[in-house]
Image (cartoon, rainbow, N blue to C red; front, side, top):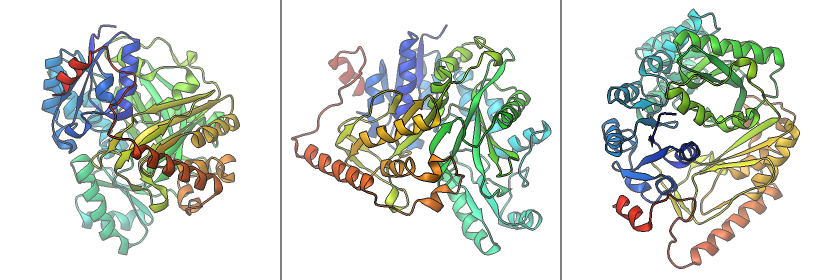
Length: 494
């Protein structure tokens, strides 16, 4: 592999994830940090770390010029954007390439074709992949939306034309709901993605959200690695993902895989990506979007395939062909990912800020934890509330669920509310255990139950947080740090 040093242009657990693979491959790493992230674990883990501005993303992690300047200063020959922030920004990909640096992801032309959702819908439809009834161009204004509603009918989904992650999406079930939904969706789209443009799709009720992981190289090879069911969501944002999907049989799996490859091939796709579908109760499916980046939930695919997707991203970005074709892809067992977020599930998953005072990591057979946690660690309000990802593998789905349930009870994050109580509930809930769920699951099932399992875990976390705060003074982060000496690290952080 020709890369000598990679700039990881992100933070939190995904920055640590990329740094670890680079270290295994013998690639040096540099990273960036905002003022509020000065003592974050990813800063300590990289070989070099550089400040890039204030806590607000626009002043730091979204500042293209500063990030590229750091890459040049550090002598990096590649930039890995992780996910979120600039990972799906075509202008950033173009600017990186113009600077003579490899972008670990698809080029800007591909991101423009697939990152803007109406463009992606047109591309999928032209390639013969089903799409939901709706708009093929961004809506001009609210009046334009009313005109489309007269044709499509209710219910519909308003969603940002650019960006992903479920942000900015609003369901409209009547004409009276449109004004408020339009204001909320355009406002959130502007904040999250810098553009207010929206599209409209006919809402498929009781659908499953199923996505297919792809890898494509610059030599024309495109492979799919299996599907993930991501239907357990709140506010259209995922909380639990698993593979194989409990409702996906071999025939549907093959059909979705072929459709995903068709979309990627039509776009000339290169690197890792995910094609997302909505699957109706009768098995009919429609193209939803394509995420032109590494997904948060990529570890479940890694556990069932035995592949390191970040390593493969780097090899493809370096111009290498994929080392296998579709016939060589093998999947074994089942895997489930729990997103541990700084949100209060008993208060509508309200995002939380505060200080983490104590952490107990789960372990044992089949357990993986991708975490950005440390003690003590301040959780700011400026960024996504994702703290860690708990992933369990088993030889079959019941075994994976049992391991995930045990590990969720083992894990403690004390100091602020997290999504752990929600996960403990779902992993024991009969409909989920039986695989009977869709994107409406949380609304139907989560009514703030206070089971003994949940209550005991919350009480223990509170007690441990109190004990930790009695200790005098903050402690520095100690863990898998870099080869730097302490003085060298302190110099870098000034």
